[in-house]
Image (cartoon, rainbow, N blue to C red):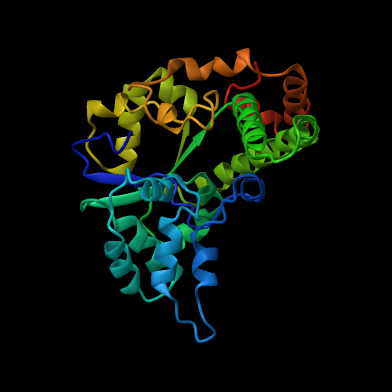
Length: 300
């Protein structure tokens, strides 16, 4: 949505995965992140082989959407451009991350990154960039669990080299782990919100996904006020992407679903949630974060 704002001159990179993904994301999708690649290309004297780093990043090894776009060719940033920018850094994580963000197809006045795991590195990011703005999108945990359960088990099915019977057994064993893992991290996100809203009120803003979809103009205007950028009506008509209910092998379809707010996304999960998952969310939520579910109106 921010990239669709023609008046703001901002660019938000699509999942750079600088710090790497969660443990489950690394296991299922191999999303190690950028820093492990750089660490692997650093010799005993601390010198980085940036040519090797760039080669690995352009091969898609970091597994973020940004790097997938470079390896597939629909993001057109020349290798030598990124190599030159990275080679000019002082080698600190801050300078490396900043170099990656500013190396785009054209120059912008401000940059960002929509990597979800960045939420768990907010303290480090604010230390790097004291004026940084963090937008935290929170969503009904039932919707997240249903979506991610389907997506991750579909990935397992497509990546599995086992027989169909063995794959089904793996899915049956992995399913509860995925649900527990996501519910735990949703609770972690709630605790992060509670803390950052007090410690970093100027850097941090929480937005309910449901408010964004149901009242896009009102909500995006609030976001623009927080970011100190002008509002543009284009923000209410972003490209529709990344539905978990699309075959994970159909990359182009997931990247070309028209524009506008996908209002069906607010309730679509209700047609897919499994009874045992619904019970798991209700029980887990009532024990570990009942106040948060009530506060965000997710208990109905």
